[in-house]
Length: 125
Image (cartoon, rainbow, N blue to C red; front, top):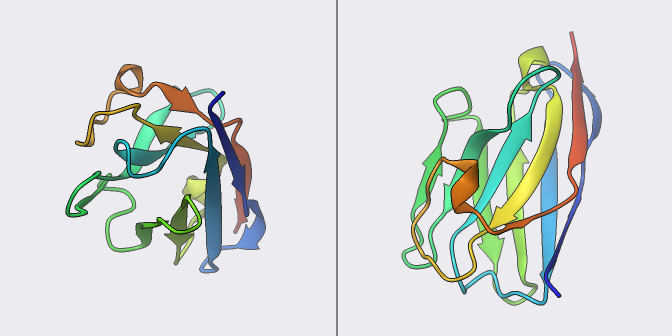
């Protein structure tokens, strides 16, 4: 059974930083692409960042480009999202996602097979 468990969310002031972690079990982070999505209150889930199986190559949404960094630790089967210069509009539930065996990143939620339960990030002004 595949499990993705996120941690690291919390309350932070604008301009601060957080690092989210996603520990995978039953699935290797080298099997397919890994990604992070967010869902803000009243909105649909949307793409934040992704990292390819090979390369690796990183992709980001325009709103986080230059502030967030995605990375993966193969030895610990974990994916991270380093979040800097946080803004109140970054407030959302953040979800880790994995593709079963496809190596490239896509922004459509329907392309991702595995999901974590999410971790809340709240940025105060």
